[in-house]
Image (cartoon, rainbow, N blue to C red; front, side, top):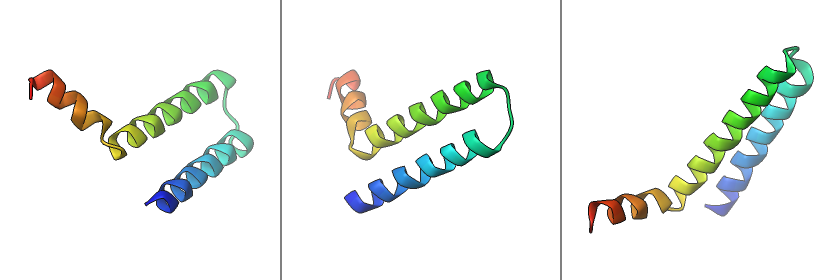
Length: 62
């Protein structure tokens, strides 16, 4: 499982680097894209490690 996470993070990082390096776009759009990708990866990791399920149980009073 850990190798799967590392490989996914490397692929996402390389794809983000390729987009930032080779696709011409305004710097503000690149910044927004980077922020969205980082937030999505953080949320994916939190979901993967079960943080969201424990939060929803705490809010439901379980």
